[in-house]
Amino acid sequence: MSENKYHDYVYFENSSSNPLLIRRIEELNKTANGNVEAKVVCFYRRRDISSTLIALADKHARELEEEMENSEMADLPEKQKHQLRHRELFLSRQLESLPATHIRGKCCVTLLNETEALKSYLDREDAFFYSLVYDPQQKTLLADKGEIRIGNKYQADITDLLKEDEEDGRDLAKLEERVWDPNSSLTEKQIDQFLVVARSVGTFARALDCSSSVRQPSLHMSAAAASRDITLFHAMDTLHANGYDMTRAIAALVPQGGPVLCRDEMEEWSASEANLFEEALEKYGKDFTDIQQDFLPWKSLTSIIEYYYMWKTTDRYVQQKRLKAAEAESKLKQVYIPNYNKPNPNQLSNNVKPALLNGAAGAGVPGPPGSGQTPGLGRACESCYTSSSYQWYSWGPPNMQCRLCASCWTYWKKYGGLKMPTRLDGERPGPNRNSTSPHGLPLRHSGSPKFAVKTRQAFYLQTTGLTRVARRLCQDIIRPRYMARHPYLPVNTAAIKAECALRLPDKPKKLLQHKPIDRKPLESVVRYLEAHPRPSKPEPLTHGGSISTGSLTPIKSSPILNNGSPTILGKRTYEQHNGLDGLCLLSPLLNSIGKDIHFFKQC
Image 1 (cartoon, rainbow, N blue to C red):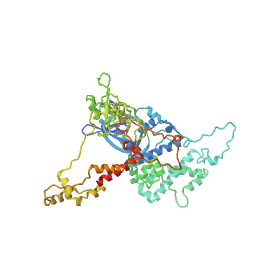
Image 2 (cartoon, rainbow, N blue to C red):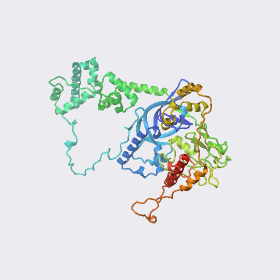
Image 3 (cartoon, rainbow, N blue to C red):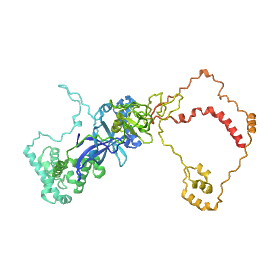
Image 4 (cartoon, one colour):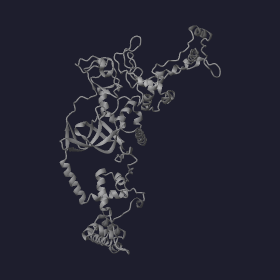
């Protein structure tokens, strides 16, 4: 039994044959019928996004590797590179609700740390990483804004400590600017009195301003707004700018045009804008860039951030925090999920006869100790090529009849791929089994495969009598020669059947007579062959004189991977199937046969 809480990364199973989903628990809610549902954040694998976005993700990884001057990825073997792609996830902002009973265990998902070795994720079980954010609606990939900025690009270079009696040669006036002198001639009481005068001027300025009168209709609200930090900062800057002279500073508070009015973001924002900000904060959190783009595009990013930190000092924030705390108390804190021990529908039974297991001949495999299973020859695991496993699982399309061993099936469910790269990901050599054919069938001494079981059901197409009659009666509509040269054009079978039904009664009910063919006797054929013997094999063409074959270097034939592999994925090339390599040797013979066929047509 596993304990699952908020912000845990867990596996969810939505299909018995597909890989497990990776989600982060945000809430645990109890439904009306007593079941528990988990509100989760979605993570996507590489197999879940398009190939275009995968190319963008690979480009981002290469740029990151070049920026950090880290060649670790290039030094990894091909197998580890393949498995490392299975550990990469893509965060999304999408939320969904799933039944808590579909949880199949915990995992660990972390933001890719630039200082951490990628190989460390392969050394840990159930460990994943992410660095990009995937938007399922827009089909885009963006860099996560919460990345840890470590390195020379972000950290400042600290200068060496000055020794005793060593002078600092820098111009301090260019490095910093003094905004307040604590050793001025004014006392603390005089400074406080000046700040009271500044608040009074601010209150009077709001009374004169029409827009402020609408936002703060009472004197109490205007005085509260004038007492905010923005007014005090302006008063202290004015005092410092006038050399801490009280008379000049007070005169600067009320210039020729009237009293100075200082407003902060809390006062500039309207009530509707504040409601939009709270709604956006509930949806995106402290992602101020998304808040600006989707909710407040007319506000600057600086204005939104300043408003956030001022909003946290208001009673509104305290009230919302108390409401959220009360809601959290009423919600479930954790849920206990018992271990899932039900058999998987893709599990192949070990009690069937070895010759019928998953449609493969002799598919018996050794089971656990004491199971009494006898090893037999069968189709190997599609991932690791092993032929022995205590349990097998069907994998892939049913017509391909592929299977995985228990270890590779667990890897497939957790990481969404095979341990070894396939032909789609990269070449991999198959096991060399001299006693089996490319289809995994035992060979006789003569080399012909002995079919122990028919792996595919044979079928043939049989036309009805009416269809055969319609081909003859409606040749002007069907146009067989034209349709044979345009196989993708649609044929209106309903119209042809209707026309055939109209023409059929008018035709005479007698068998169609074939045209007699006058064939020449065998003696004339023999005399023709004697008069036209088979031409001799032409000499190979050479350019620029004769070439000595002894000086030629034999061409090395490229090795054929997966030769003799009993798996479906290890297919032969088109040339191997069709024998195109020997086509040039048959051209003289084909020319001779063509002439003979022409003679027989004349006969």
